[in-house]
Figure 1 (cartoon, helix red, strand yellow):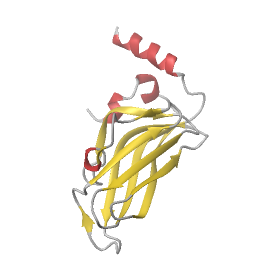
Figure 2 (spheres, helix red, strand yellow; figure 1 turned 45 degrees about the vertical axis):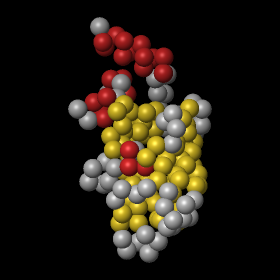
Figure 3 (cartoon, rainbow, N blue to C red; figure 1 turned 180 degrees about the vertical axis):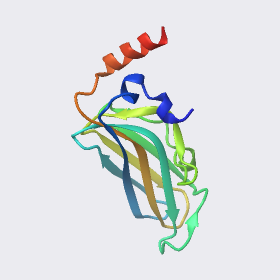
Figure 4 (cartoon, helix red, strand yellow; figure 1 turned 135 degrees about the horizontal axis):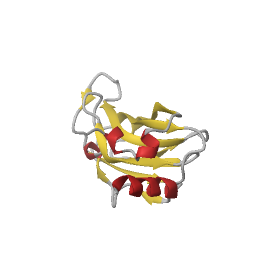
Length: 157
């Protein structure tokens, strides 16, 4: 089953949604540096994250790297929660265009919410980093979290 199948039924069947990607870049992140950047979710819709991809290159963009030694932490300002108990290996969260990382369960980011993404480069070489969060924008009078939970409980019976 893919991540779409893990969406709550009420959202999966919601008629007003569209595929969307939020992206952020570090051009470059400094050698052995730590830097945070934000992704601002638009005010017209909630965003449900299903997958994550990234491209890491040298600063000339000539060489693409695999297994970049770095860590990442993501904080959702709307909920005030971190995605991980501590910073985790970059490759544990970001796949490639060919093999995206699929979230174990979709993650809802509320409209107008901000994701703060902190990268720590663990090597002594600056890198250009581009990340993408793939998912759905959900428009309209979206059901509340309580309504989604109630619908899920009903579907499980």
